[in-house]
Image 1: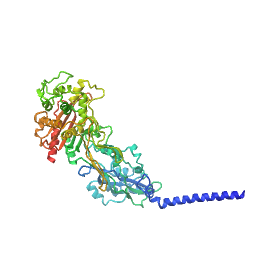
Image 2: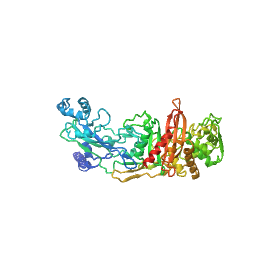
Image 3: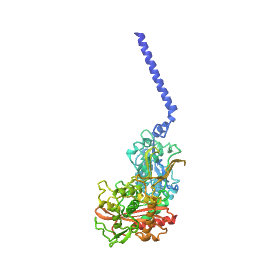
Length: 602
């Protein structure tokens, strides 16, 4: 019995010895090897993370990727300077420094254009370092004069540090760029970026525009922090100086190079503003490949202060609207392709058609005219008669072949770890008719042929329609991004131009050329005569769609076209929404101003 007991005790001691040996080896492994390895899901080592747990920090840069125009000019991210306020610890220290009679405090308040009371109140908010915001939600950027005065103002818990500002503090029509917002659902999958220090600093994610569609690529590898060492109770240890910590990856943050020309973008924004445009959009495409050179949405928005309930943040350039007579391009194409109408055939317009309440915009009519003249004069009677010879399916197929009634922007599946990479956020496909409309409904077909009833087209689609005609009926997919680079300049991802073919095929080059000639006739002999004084020879098609807004009758004004006629460089679509009926055609005038600007800057 004693022998068995001794054996059990011996075996127990051996087992305990083995367990302790394993624990000692494991502890040694952690202390000597693993402490210097990067933790799974983080960009920092165990040693660095253990230090960070004893620090409080303020974010200098979120580490988010930047966005530029086609020439490399920055559209996001400018390095500016702000004042970081370090909370004081210890009752006596706070009393001595946080006193309205303190001379140094008064000097700082004067430089920051505030008073000592407001400065003290914000200084002592919380127990973590933070930028001076003057009561706002953004760090107050120092001007040159303030920066010069604060160069020698160090110590006492206030210091000047660089901060990366995402956007300019101004309203803009670049809704395609988007904005950032704090989205807990998105950030829940990015814990490695949100718990590096105990202070819960805010990391925002893309909520709209390119910021949203490219968010997985733009989110970066983590923030750059300014930290202070604290005690176990959270008090700052004054003996330890502040330190800056940043991710160690030379490839990040990424840089997104867009196709936009910032000069054209700003020029078109200024034109829209000076013209008093209240609602609508202007799109400028390069006719060579359908790249977006400028895209303006009105009303403008402030990316720093976005109210989701206010629609100004939405990009009207990719939202569909009733197209009116610009849709007659599609109807004319369908008629020419199917030979439903002869170019030599004559129609008669007496002002009233006698069916479905349809009339021509010219009170007493145009008299006798051919399809070409009806196109130039935008005669509803001519196109109503044309629509009677077409089926709804022919209109739908032709529209699809021309890049309408479907999303048209550049996209690709399974790229850069994303199921689908799109350039245009919330792009509307538009439509020709609703599912409840019968193909045998002649009234619906006639209204559709003149761009009314259920027809919807976006300004992006309308501008791209012009590019399609210039390219003999081949539909391009408009691009907003041309490539993405690593921080060291190497290319991460190229996004070459691509076509957007239709299952319905394409219209013939002969039809494309004929429609382009007819658009020139709109300017020389039709509804666009005011464009004869433009700097370039231009061509296009006007449109006025009747709509209702909150029970009131309103018009959508359109003009789409290209220039110069001799060697097309730009396709432009202008939509002015919800205009009082009877108003001057502002869209045509805006088209001329945009084309004149493009001619001057070329």
